[in-house]
Length: 366
Image (cartoon, rainbow, N blue to C red):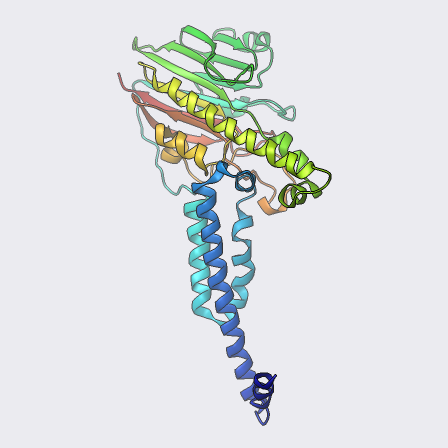
């Protein structure tokens, strides 16, 4: 109490200008401390998300939030720092720019490589919940040689639409090729329970070489997210609600543990191939966390190497203001192993479908 009394007494006798100046300095000290705390805490959380990711059910859940969520405190604080502590405003601005570039993965100028010989163009799209839209305009623009679909329509649809192409359909997977398909089937070694999550195709290129294409659709955690809406997330974090919280935590842990194991088996299967290999499809994995790091360490990511912008593919139609009513996740990918050189990668610009299509061009090194 004596300290407070002395502090109050120090303000007596000050002129208005002197009092305002002292308040300004106090506000500057306060906002500078808060700015440092925001940058340090957010950076630590982002490192946890990227490095630990799916190893913890809550971190894994946070990976799927719109990216602007993690920079929102810095954005809110920035105007105050501009007024009261300009140097720390510069720090926040640098943090925001670095976040948008490094963590959110903005690609500035990955220029496409021109190649007239041996170029193969592949289009991939999850066509489920497409809002009665089609990829026709995007496909006509890029004229793909191969098309891989997940949650595909019945095979008759593709045979009638592409009568001069070869069509193979297995469960939810469909594959359409201008080149002869010499092998096709679901990958038995990589299943989610009894459900196949990848189909494998071997095509014969005009040069006579072989190319293996894996059409992938990893399991989604959407059913878990639905259960964590409203009070579900609080119940999962703090427990209670007659055991519902512990049930949600267990479902999340089991799902992500299973997904990590599934991806490890997929990687091992693909790396056993003797021909050049491409993986494409709906991986249901954001570009952060353990699973993506394992995939990108084993294979090249086409968009990361040759794309521009953020490459967000999901959800194609959203009312979420935190994503500015745009897609906010990159979960549809094209990866490649040895023997494949990516030339370009592009995500469909605008279509109110659940997933935007991805098209990549590459050379097969024989």
